[in-house]
Amino acid sequence: MNASRIMEIERFAQALVKGAAMQLYLTPKPGLVDLVDCGSHPDLSLAKMERSLHIIGDYLAETIRSLADGERFLCQAVIGRRAEQVMLDELGTNTHRGYIFLSGLLLISRWHAGSDDAHRLGQAVAALAREYFAVSEEQESNGHAVRKRFGAGGIVRESLAGLPSLFSCAVPAYLDAIDRVGCFTAASFSTLARLMQTVEDTTTLHRCGTMGLARIRRDGQLLEQTIDEGADFMPLLAELNREYTRMNLTMGGVADMLGLAYGYLTAAGLLTGDAGKSRRPRPLSLHRCASGT
Ligand SMILES: CC(C)(COP(=O)(O)OP(=O)(O)OC[C@H]1O[C@@H](n2cnc3c(N)ncnc32)[C@H](O[C@H]2O[C@H](COP(=O)(O)OP(=O)(O)OP(=O)(O)O)[C@@H](O)[C@H]2O)[C@@H]1O)[C@@H](O)C(=O)NCCC(=O)NCCS
Ligand SMILES: Nc1ncnc2[nH]cnc12
Image (cartoon, rainbow, N blue to C red; front, side, top):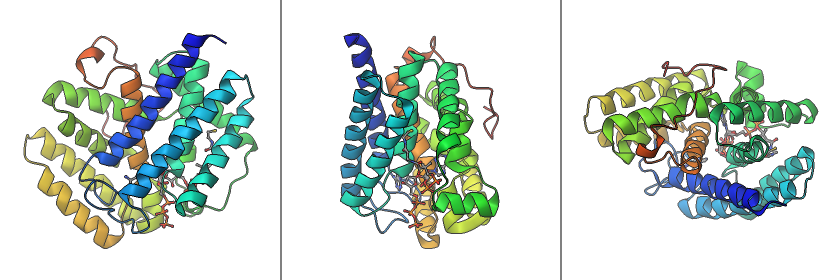
């Protein structure tokens, strides 16, 4: 097996774990676990989420071994299910179920695509997701219930469409913001704001229905506008966190997509913005970002 190919995919996996950590430590995030509190998740804590990051690291390493051994995709899907079970057994709760699925799918796609090109990665993700959902039976889950009740797409539609919230929304939003404001924190919250307006988050729908989703979209718009005006956006974030916690409102899917964006940007060498000017990924045309980036 080509050693440089293995090193390349290991570097990609490390970036995905780092992406989840960067998302976790971004503070304050409304309704989500961060450095200050656990938002609307009394079953979670920073320590638990950090242990969960190790589970993700071990899971991605096992997936790489399977890829390097030339095993079939279904073997990697089994490894993903096992990681979900390890998370539940060791932590007693759902810390990163979505991220286990999304990061695994992106890693396997990166292996097959052989490049960081957004278009090729998106297509590879969509093809793998089609293969995965063609044979896997819908489990009883919050996402399943919400898809049935509201006709929502959630993680299933997101992955079948090749991760448009990543490639057509979060990545361009981050790169535009870092160009304009040159500040990692403002660019990060700008990306979060854009994802809040775009992701059809089944965790939000499960907790607070369509009103909850509408609320998050509105708040995402307000946050983006506040950042664009150059105003101090920290008081708004703190206030939203208080309100979401009171309402039991959350956005676990948005959190996962932000982590994935940090991971991809890190792996592609685009996180600082400057290096990225000549290497901007071509956005997927599969579906457009809500705010029309
Ligand atoms: C296909 C599966 C991932 C199952 O998906 P399904 O939607 O049926 O099941 P859920 O349990 O609802 O998990 C989906 C998680 O995906 C995240 N998510 C939601 N909406 C989106 C979206 N639009 N785009 C992307 N991602 C999305 C979200 O994960 C985050 O939130 C989690 C906390 O959520 P939840 O459990 O609802 O909240 P709790 O507070 O725990 O619940 P309550 O207390 O309110 O009851 C957190 O984990 C974040 O990660 C959704 O939770 C999967 O089952 C599957 O097939 N996996 C195995 C195979 C695998 O992973 N293979 C690897 C690659 S092949
Ligand atoms: N920061 C976070 N808070 C709550 N749920 C999450 N799922 C993934 N990241 C999360």
